[in-house]
Image (cartoon, rainbow, N blue to C red; front, side, top):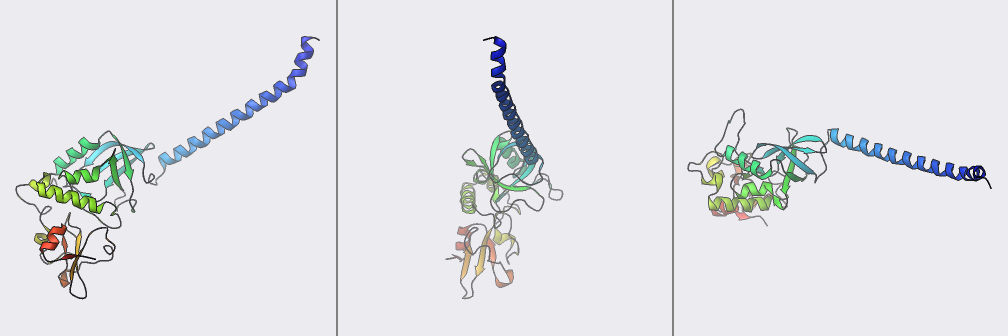
Length: 258
């Protein structure tokens, strides 16, 4: 049998294999194009990243605000539940301990890979992502409070770690760390009773505990994250007020809400 006859009999099989390889190549190229299209959409979309994205910190703006990169897109992130003294405010200017807080935040996260955790709200009124920022097992929001570089500033419905933050702040205050060790108290570090002797419609910075007077006259305080916190209103005309700590509320004659 000649070699030409053998090649003729094998050619249909070879053609079948060739078409199979071509089909496989087409499928692989299609999959790559779909993946690239999805990746491009995620990188350029105006919507926020998913709730627990890994992000690279590209800039530390101040003590509680950073800029991160997620999937090729830049986002400004505002830490949930805390507040640090201002460094760039157009009216307040540079506040006491503001530069120190910004520097500590920079030491903690700048240039590092962090995990962003969402609570309930997506963004604040300025369009910044509201997130808890994790560096390994360290919750950076809490760490800044614990070290005395930030105060608790919790607003419902984002109260997942409110109790942890309050405990960290009490620890920092008791130890006189950071801004709590300032020789001269400022309006941002005084007790709520000093700031609002008659009560406040909105809480002083770091003083998120609601002092409410029940219908039966009982003075009860509500911690952020408690069952009735979001429904509780502070009415100064009734003698209701805000407190910075549970100890302060109890010292003033208020009891924890059941």
